[in-house]
Structures are given as structure tokens and as C-alpha cells.
Amino acid sequence: GQQVMQIPQYQHVQEGEDFTTYCNSSTTLSNIQWYKQRPGGHPVFLIQLVKSGEVKKQKRLTFQFGEAKKNSSLHITATQTTDVGTYFCAGNQGGKLIFGQGTELSVKP
Amino acid sequence: DGGITQSPKYLFRKEGQNVTLSCEQNLNHDAMYWYRQDPGQGLRLIYYSQIVNDFQKGDIAEGYSVSREKKESFPLTVTSAQKNPTAFYLCASSVGTSVASLEQYFGPGTRLTVT
Image (tube, rainbow over all chains, first blue to last red; front, side, top):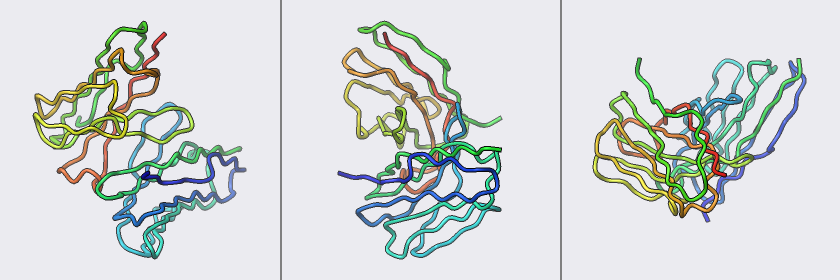
């Protein structure tokens, strides 16, 4: 079936450490989106990647889309306590947006 | 303020009862969606609508029903046929009708508990 696998499921870091979450699809994606959901909140759109090999940055966040458009990553440099939450990728597979399971990030001050 | 509203925030029902969750948007978005979120899982699409008076089943439509009589409203009914209705329900919308390639705006969600 259509799936977007996201790892790890949980990540606990010390404030100031880096964090990366990965998404993988068995099929080519037309585009991939990233969302952040704070504890008790709702998902908020972060970014969309469309082109093969695309890299986009938002302050300490770096998003990459693989050359084959089957994988993507989100990297946070020097995490802060405000980064806590669950990060979801969502891949466009044949016109359907399929969400990964999410990576829950906790940051210890 | 533009946005999506969902009500109520928390809802409790007895097993065997139908319940309708409200979703309203004033963003003038064409497409609206309903997702279900369970612990440790991603969002799963229940239904979506790209235009008034039309809607499509998502991946887990069984036990749910929707209507789209107005552009700004997309209520979801959780019927007694839904085997595991307790979950966090999220409504979303996007401008245009290309449902998988546009930013989705989410409402605050309704947490439904059925006992």
C-alpha cells in the first residue's frame, strides 16, 4: 500500500544538540511537505519541497529532498526548547498526501 | 481573523450514538479535509472535498459520513458503525483543488471519547 515511513519515532536531545528526522517512500513523490505539531496542538505547515535534490533552509532548520524524490530529511541545528513537538512529513503519492508517523522531539534544557 | 474553527474541543459520547463534529473556515478555501490522529500514528485521511456538494472517501472512510453544502462548512459524522471512534479529529483546508500539493491549514481539533 501507499506508505511514507518516518524515523525515528522518538528523539530525546540535550538543548544545543542537533536533530534529524528522515522520511522514506517506496515510490517517487511529486512533492513533500513538512509539518510541526506542538504538544496538545495541531499541525502547522513548515515547508514544501518539489524539485529533485532541493535544499531549503529556515533559520536553524534545513530540509532536503532526495535526488530520486523518494526520501527527505529535516535537520535542526542546535535545538532549543521551543523546538519540542512532533514533526511530520507528508508525501504526494499519485495525487494523495500520505503522512509519515511523525518524530516526537523532546529537548532537555 | 481568518482561520479554521472546530467545535467542541472535547466530546464525550456513549457507544452506539452518532456524533457530528463541526468544522468551519473563513479562508475562502476550496478544499477541505478530515483526518484522524491516533497516538504514535500519522494523520489518516477520512474524507475530503474539493468543491461544494462533492466529496471523496479517504483511506479510512468506513463508519464516517460528511456533507459539503456550503463552501465554508464540512461537518463530519462519526456513526455507530465506526468500531474505534475514540481519537483526535483534525479538519483542514487548502486553497485550490490540488489536494496533495498545497499547504494545508489545520483547525485546533476535536478530541472524541466514546465509552
